[in-house]
Image 1: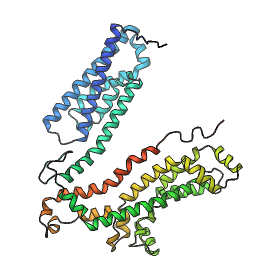
Image 2 (image 1 turned 30 degrees about the vertical axis):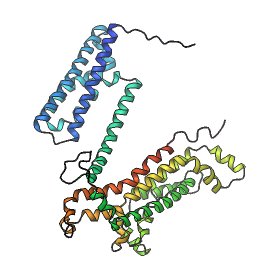
Image 3 (image 1 turned 90 degrees about the vertical axis):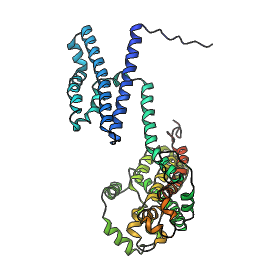
Image 4 (image 1 turned 45 degrees about the horizontal axis):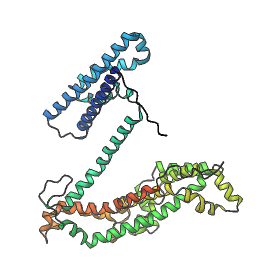
Length: 408
């Protein structure tokens, strides 16, 4: 039997309150949009800035007036002293806003205080405690962050595929593949691409295996000298010996101008080691105890029980470690002086961007016309492998991976 849920009919006063609440929330969102636009983009003309200031003041005034009317209504019903007993902060915020907002129109250093005014003074958000509005705000912020990261990538993609002389935003215009073909025909770049793949794969494998194995004993509270080792790792993470000692060390080990100098110095990333250690500590100890009762040794427990359970964290650490290796240019600058054949992609692109376009285009004047597109094509090619691998990592990001592993 299906029961129809009958929604209670709202009174006229409740409907008015809901409309006012939605209107105030809309004013708040538009005001925040104006503030973010002013802080992010400084290229607005004076007339546009003045118009945005006026719009902000109007929206703020609407929310403030609504707040004052609400305070008067509450005070009339239960007394002003009773209101102050519970909402003294709101009253002080409203008084402060009458000074801060007008002052921000004439004193540029007060501009940042507008965020405080718009979020606290009108007291709009406190009346929106329900889950639906939280989801709207969270998804809105997520969309903004996605746009913040994806728009530059689309701009690089559009510039790489567009013909010269076009004003490009995020959509290619007059598609021309000359720049892409030039990059794909550059044997030196393809060699650096292969170097980066080797460095990333081998470095990630060595790094993740080392950190996964090191984190396991460190996660055991009764391990001898555990605190001393943790202190050592924390000091290494927070303080560096400097560039010169690292170069001297690589030189004494005979690793200068070798591809291993681009891998070994970055094997242990202490932050990721701590993440793995923390994840191991969250795994129920009963799993290991039951395995030991069955005769399993520490290596069997680590590789057959702990690592499979910790696979989401290990996959995440592997992905970020791979990104660190792929984008690492410091090792190339410090440890490779003469052997340019082992340059990874970031170092090759850095050298290419540092060249004089006139000298590069001496034998082929067409390159000068496509110079911007060629630069963007190199950058695009360097992004593609990570962009392709990125979606596959999400299947490992699961919550409660050890839930249900131990039965009561």
